Image 1: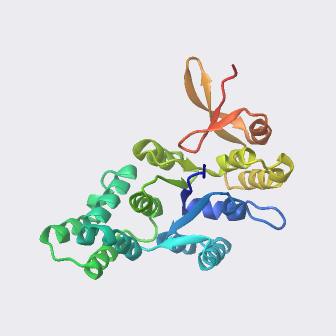
Image 2: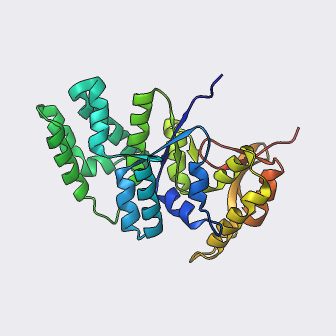
Image 3: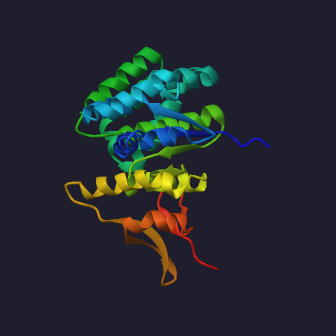
Length: 275
């Protein structure tokens, strides 16, 4: 029986970090794109955010992968077009609803603060794709570059993929635990963090010796940060319940290959309870 294809969305923070973590001749981002059975997507907003963040290497990598067809990039216009093929002008309502749901995951007032003109336009009727996109751009211009909302657009794209292909989309996403919890717990969208990528590589049969250089690059990146990170949080069953606790980074890869962890839906690692 053929395994069902997996549809995955890449977000800004993930792509940026996966281009920093690398061996002498290969980036972790390339390892991810080689995952068998996956189709990869991103939102146009991610391209813009990589530019805003000054991630030129990641920006160039992403553009090359889009041009080669390894990553499919969706703009808001493309999302509306694809939905309209099935729902005609109801595509505007669907997009608006996806956007509102995405906003509510991270900030209950975000949609009302910036996007209410979309409601007014839909209620008055008579909008077309050009008008809708123009109003959407005007709303987003009020947000400004200092506020990242790429995760909201990733959510919109995830819901679009689910609608178009009748299957859930995975999100390779930020190490921001709150954002991942919003995706996984609020909407049941499974997340894959940088840390859980190492578990996936193990489960796919990659030898520890192959993965070790990437992991050491990850460790160096953690230690070289402005606020050095020596520990990562994993879930451990303790005193009758799961608790999110710190463990030293340097032990994590050995523990992964020792079978001590499984991946949670929110992208965190969960310690496996021994029988």
